[in-house]
Amino acid sequence: MEWSECFPKDTQPGMEQISAFAGTPLWERLCGWLEAEWSVRPLVQYSGCSGAKGWNVKYRKSGRALCTLYPGLPGGGSFTCLISIGPKEAMEAEAYLGAACGYVRDIYWAVPPLNGARWLMLEVKDEQVLRDVQALLRIRAGAR
Image (cartoon, rainbow, N blue to C red):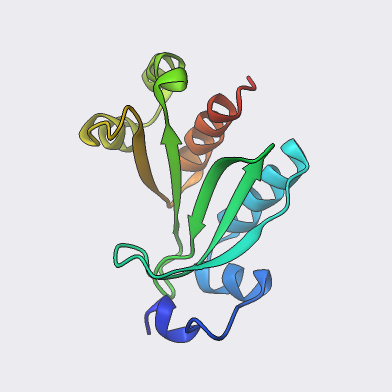
């Protein structure tokens, strides 16, 4: 069953339900890291966007979006993290890509800039991708 079917617009899931649906400890590790690193709280919101319809989890720092997390497919053992790398972060992000895994590098270069920003939809499926997502989030937040 699709995520959007499990929890329709009028049925907001809790973080425990979202984590269970994601089906990977990487979800809780990233959420815990975000909350500890920047003292931010998750915001569960519904999106009617056809590309990622359903409930998602947003993290913001000082009013600025850090990322949006989408729980993925049931039993898939992964989730998607959307990070926007704008023109202010691009040079540092591109310098980091030499240390990133091939998957993250390929996604970064395959996504054309839209209004100067690259909207990266990264499937967090293993430790390497999680590490790269954390590095890109540090860049996004202006921290190293």
